Image 1: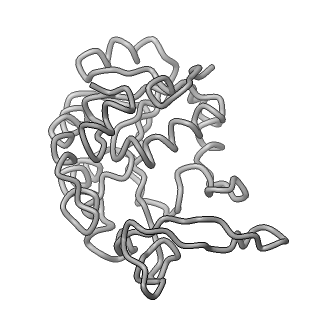
Image 2 (image 1 turned 120 degrees about the vertical axis):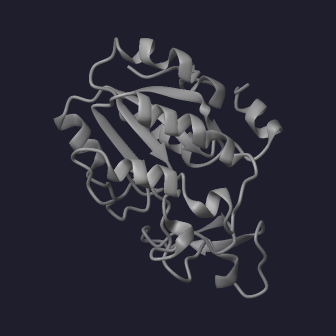
Amino acid sequence: MGAKFMNFAATATLLLGASLVTRLACTRAPLWSLIDIQNDFINGSLNNPRAPAILPKVYKLLDDHEWPFIVASQDWHPKGHVSFASAHPGSQPGGSVQVPFVETPLKTETQAFTYAYHCVPGTWGAQLENGIQSRLWDLEGYRAPVHYIKKAQDHSYHRFTTLHSELTLHTIATMALTGLITSACVRGTSIDGIKLGYEIVLIEDATESISAEARKAGGLR
C-alpha cells in the first residue's frame, strides 16, 4: 500500500479536483486532510501570495461532496518557540541556528531554520481561514481541534498523536491531501502517511507551494 517515490512528485497519486470523486469512489472510507490552511500562511506573518488560489477549490470540495472523515490540521507553536527567529538574539527569519535534540541522552545539536512569529495558539494567525472554519462548523459530528504540533507524530517519531489509531479503528486506508505547503507540511504528511501504510492521494489544484519553481520541482503543474 502507498506509493513508490524518488522525489516529492512521486510520493502520491496526483489528482485534479474534477477527477477526485471518480478516483476516491473506489477506495475504502477515504480520509480528507486539510493541512494548515491558516491565516498566517495566507495573509499573515508567513503570508504566501499563491495560497488564496486554493480556497475556492477547497470550498467546493466541502460544499459539493460528502466525506466519511475530514481532518483539518493546524500548525501550533508556543510563544518563544525554538523555530522563531525572535527566540535567538541576532537571528533573522530565514536563517538557521543550532539547537539541542532534547529527546536524546547525549543532547546532540541539530540545525534548525528560523521563521517569523506564527501560528501561536489564541492568535488570529493560528486560526483556520474563515471560509474553511465556517464550513467545518456546519458539518455533522464536528469536533473542536485538538492542539497537536504535528499531524501524526513529532519530528523525531518519539511521540504520537491519536490520529493513526483513530484511522485504524475506522479502517481508513486512503488519505486525500489538500493545503499548504508542498515543500513543508503537505510533503511531511505525505511521507508520514506512506510510512504508516496509507495510500496517499494529493489533490493537485487544492494544494500550493511558495513559488512556481517550488511547485514545478515538486512535480505539480
